[in-house]
Image (tube, rainbow, N blue to C red; front, side):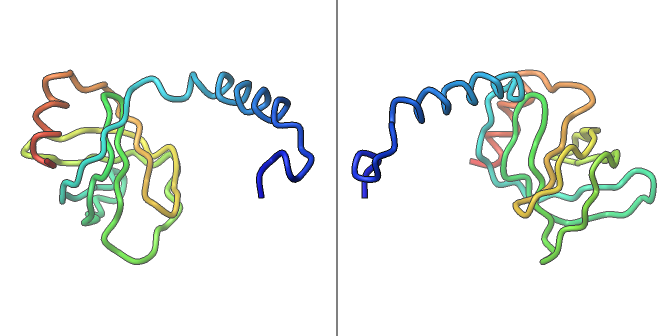
Length: 121
C-alpha cells in the first residue's frame, strides 16, 4: 500500500522528515565507515576486559559489539579500545542492542583512520 492509497499527505510527511534530518544533522560530525576488527575494550574504572568487534568507525568514535550475548548498560563509562597496537580512549555514549557507541576523547587523524580501515578490509 502506498502513501497515496492511505490518504496520508506525503508532502507534509516529507517536509517533517526533512526537518527532523536537519535537527539531527549536528549529531553526526564525522562520516562513519563499516569495518570488522576483532579487538577488546577495557572499562577503565574496573580494568574489566571485554572481547568483541569494532564494526563501525569514524574520526570521532566507533561502535564496539561485545562477543557476549548480552549487553550491559554502560553509558558514560570511560573505556579504552586497542586496535593494531594503538589505544583509543573514549566514553560510551550509547548502549544499544547493536553495541556500544563510543565517543573518542581525542579525534583520530585521517591517516590513522585510513590505516585502521585497511585492517578491516
